[in-house]
Picture 1 (cartoon, rainbow, N blue to C red):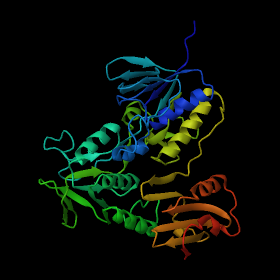
Picture 2 (cartoon, one colour):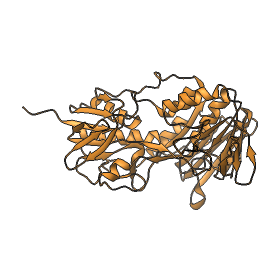
Picture 3 (spheres, helix red, strand yellow):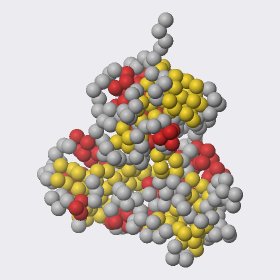
Picture 4 (cartoon, helix red, strand yellow):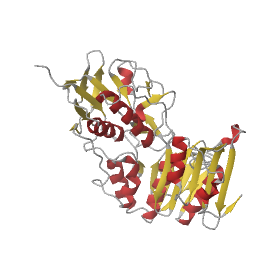
Length: 403
């Protein structure tokens, strides 16, 4: 008797859950098993800052995963692609017909003196990363008694975490090594408007500054010698793809696990998606591209679209909670492309800023801060490469004066 085909998914995060859900929704019949290191079902990491504020609880952010078998707390520690076998932390082994690596990423712990305990076993008391629900629970507990917090890193995670801590009544300071906040998605003008909006919440920001050390007294010491008093430190310095398992198995690894347009690695029947995958030299590290990759791979492996290809993403960075709202997508830094046109609208009194980057009548990129009423229309225009109206100002009319 022939056994059922087996698809093993190493990881039970956002990409893994999306793959399993779409695979079964598209009619896939193989047995899919998710092996997760965390002792819980998949959940939406993007909403961790909102869990911190109490807007959502752990159950609310749970993600569907189709009819897959879930193995929480089952960490995979070994992989043999030739034998199509994986080894779990408890010493047991499992076989598979197709393998999906969705191992995700770990938070970057910067080389700052004093972050770790004296014995080097982990982060010192009062220092937190925010990547899992367990991290969120520990941070929430410490935040209840904290008066001041320093967030190291002013990217998307740093800003959302600072906003969440401010909502809990904590005075927050962001120290960011980059020239301005969220420099990968926002331009300088948008970052300046965002900085003002954060200040109204009690969040001060220090772009262009580097943290040198955490002192024995728990102060944050900057490279210029200035010290910030704090009860709480949150590390939001980006993430690094989890590639150790793939590397040990002999798969090609750059920054992430190298995949082609079919999301296949160099080993037969082995694929990678999400934060661990490197496609055409890029590791996106965002939920949108991870889900797009999961959709393509699910369509291929279930047979619904065996020719499906992933050719890249135009990710959308977005924060839509509380009094701060922003969205950015596409190419928003047109300085190196003189053929592009830029349309900006600002309203300093409302802290609003909008920017469209155009090539002729086509949208290339956009930044919206303070008013996201048109974000859906703009995102669709970019995705479909639709022509914009002769006078696209109506897409930005909720703002004030043009400049």
